[in-house]
Length: 224
Image (cartoon, rainbow, N blue to C red):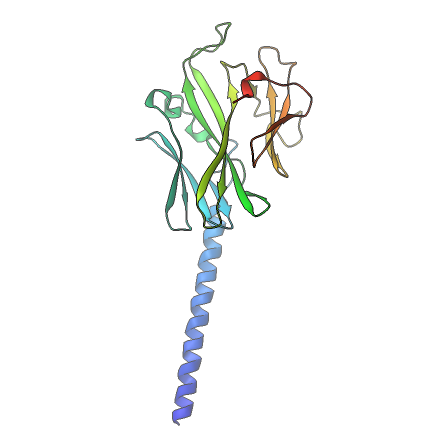
């Protein structure tokens, strides 16, 4: 009888362990599903990393900081950039257009890369007085270490009226739209206004920020 009692206890313990594993798996799967949100205004507010779990994009209106928060390690926060109050994108209602370009980081080798976009308000106009108060957009790429820690790889100016550089959100020249990620590159369908005929398609390598021009037209504003 004593052996039977021990066997029953062992089966109960195994059952509890299996239940715990199943519950954890279901919770993890639910969290992952919730992380994969839909694209709005051309960007995602979450991206799902194999290393850091669900990573959320956030703009802090008090500190004017662009923040990333990951679920693994729990509530790990990283500041992409702090923007001066006079250049806050909230002044132009541009915050909703800021976020991630992909639902999941791009894996290059053993490293995950996260392409995102943030904006700044600007008061400078172009040489012909067209712009006045406007917005500049920056591409930033963040890498993840094996322990789930963030590191900024580079940032590039990708849209600025003052620099006569823009990309059309409704571009139809590329089948994938004005901005898209393919292999190890992120592509921008740029145009240089006011001369809309000069429209370089640039591809930026995610691991080092190097820019190549698909149609051979180079814009000096992209030089760091």
